[in-house]
Image 1 (cartoon, one colour):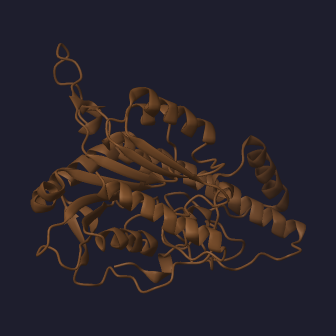
Image 2: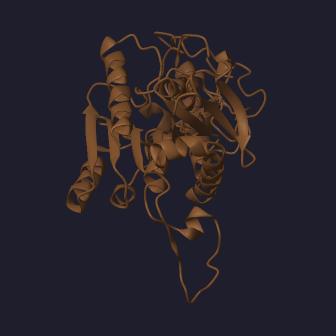
Length: 353
């Protein structure tokens, strides 16, 4: 079911693509609800660029970018499909011998590129090949990060003019702004209730896999990683189900963890409190010096896990970009080796729990 033209090298690659690309018609069609920047003179362009860059580094500048994943999408086979659970779009991929041989149920929470990303589908298929019925929900309710038609492998001019520099800088600034707006729309209050609906429906539909695994497993990449942590915590029912407190005297009732074990890779927007609240065994494959999951936050979170006695493993991969653990083609063999190692780490953790 994946579409080649929106396949990306790594799960956050869409965040790096030009949402405003020089003089090209990159703004045709949907653009995440933000009107394109047009008809600005050179002075205005420079002013906007400088004022924005003085505030902070663009989000997109923190991410690597490169070639699309190779290989035919497997979402068109008899064991993969885009379907609906609880009226929410999901990508489902199953072992080739299911249901004749027992399998376990795995919730796959993707990066912002969502369920139609070829890379995300291929990554989910890898877990299915190891005996898991994998359900990857559209946790963005149709509002995933979108990729434009610009060739991601086109190299910039080695000696760009001042105007071209301004254009390139403005594009980074504009896409950073758009991504910030997108992230603001993907609130915990929106995502968690959606995931609970999918979980309830998936447990009914694949009750045999739940019984075989004695519960539900979960993996998460980038944006999805934080929600694996939250699903492995005791959340107030007001958050879990998106409801107001029904009985003020009773107060807020906590909902038990929805998963029995989890594994994440290069999480985004994770806080110490997210890790501190964990009630289930967790494995983390992390990127060293990752500005999207800072080393100090990871260290504080690990201390919380040690202090609480929660079973965990944390492996830090140096010299690799954020997003390295999802299927993709990298020229650097070190990154490809780390990609393989991260998958083996996560798979082994799930299989042992």
